[in-house]
Length: 109
Image: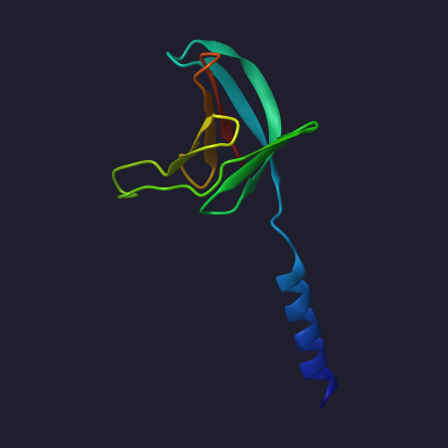
């Protein structure tokens, strides 16, 4: 009788201890006016109110995403690096680099 509650507690603690799982996503690189420049892949960590993108040795953290009205405006933030980060949907993420006139939009499964 005592084994079942102990097993349940152990499983609950193991589930709560795991960190966010990243997903490998395909990215489309383009200029700000939409001209295609190529493709890339990166691992995206969706944290709902923020996201992280990792590629090779580089990780960009969006920071807290803000939107006054999520039905009308895309949740967005400015990263420490000066990129504009957008969470377009639960499967689409974008980083915009205005200094180099390019953007990457990742589509995740």
